[in-house]
Amino acid sequence: MKYLFIYSLVLSTLLWAQDSTNNLLLSLDYNLQEENLQEWEKTPHTPSSIMATKKQGQEWRSFWVDAWNRGVFNREQVREVVQSAQSYGYNAIVVQVRRRGDALYVPRLPNTEPRLSNLEKDFDVLQEFITESHKVNIEVHAWITTFLISTSTLPKSTEHVVNRHPEYLSCNSEGNQKIGEGYYLDPGHPGALKWNQQVVMDIVQNYNIDGLHFDYIRYPNQNSGFNQVALSRYNQEHGLTGKPDPTDPLFSQWRRRQVTDWLRSMYLQIIQEKPSMKVSAATFASRLDAYSHRFQDWAHWMKEGFIDANISMNYSRTNERFEERVDDILRHSYSRHVYMGVGAYLLPQENTIEQLNYARKQGSTGLILFSYANNNKQGKSQWLESLQTIHKEVLYQPALVPDMPWKKTPPHGNVWGQVTDSSGQAIYNADINIPTLGLTTKSDSLGYFGFLWLPLGNYKVVYSREGKNISERGVSVNPGKVTNCFFGE
Image (cartoon, rainbow, N blue to C red; front, top):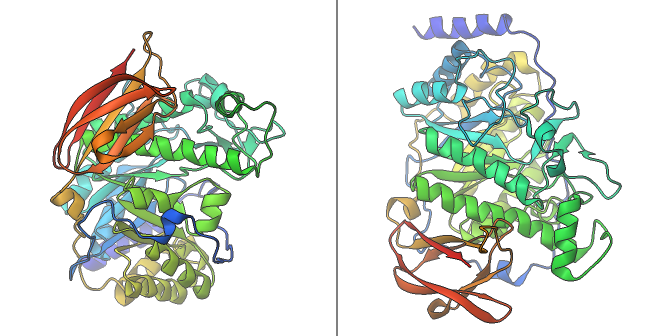
């Protein structure tokens, strides 16, 4: 039976049609240098008092199944992926279900994103993965490309967000909307955030997934984020006019906040709907580059518990660079999970094995390959041989999915809410505080706010603006729950 399975995989490889061009952006080899750390980075902070220790026999093992290559285009390919995962030592699959603003699932209102054009009408890729994977106790994490919304070739569908809402697109300081490998939604435009929110919650509410995985949850580079609505909001907030320099520190921090605020709100909405769901993000391995050039402050996300797992895209052709990054990433795990991503597509098999072993030795909670069908430097035709070799050398012993203690036995609770005016419009930058805990935050561009990892108990939440208390609400914080707290004028 084993040989029949291998024969069928090899045969399907020979029949594999030419791949679509893969426009995925590579994680560049930036040289990691020590920098002047912010104060919050100097002292490790644990959002939960329960540490994410890894028990013997526990290791998260996965591969990204991208929607540019084999693995998602028919039921046979889905079953092949699941069988491969089961045979070669993996306990989770991260499958791309939103490629570039198009769906590999069945959208439900208010989510109106178009389906990927070359899928059969009745074929639900995500549901097929869930059905097949859960039969053999393999997790399914739904991978969405968050802000990168189109390749350099614009989509034709009138339902695509690019065509329905071109005003949501980001641009650079020269006004060009195509940035790098394609077109991005601008995190500084509230409409773009609302659109993405509807996509995420559609998937979370209607599919029995184990995790939600955010990719491209960032700006493309420093010279981006110059959407007219975003610029107007920035200038109004800071009493400025004109256009800031792409490297302006204040504008950089403002852009970081737009991404972080939205992620915080999404995390709370997701775990309110399904408390056990795992939320992860694909992050640039260079913390400096992520923070300064992509406005992706993943170390802060880990520190505050806005994600459960950092899935680092630690793609490097050199082991030395890979190892430097592993050590830095793990130093900034703040007791959350780290699943180390290895760029197997860049590497000969021996380097992939060395990098996987190093990440394991240093204490990474999990390992993940990029990608399932493009997993070695020798070419995609060697994908099966590569999986077999990695299984033989690294994943030969079975492993359970590691526990997340803050989800299994949560000692804390959360508060999430929104501030709106008398017409129901969101109020940005409202001051929200919990006086007895000394905690203060501000509402985001959709009016949302949140407090995570609060001690259990009853509290008063106060909404104020321009130094005047407007309203207050009593809340009860319960273990692992998200308590609503909404303010309307």
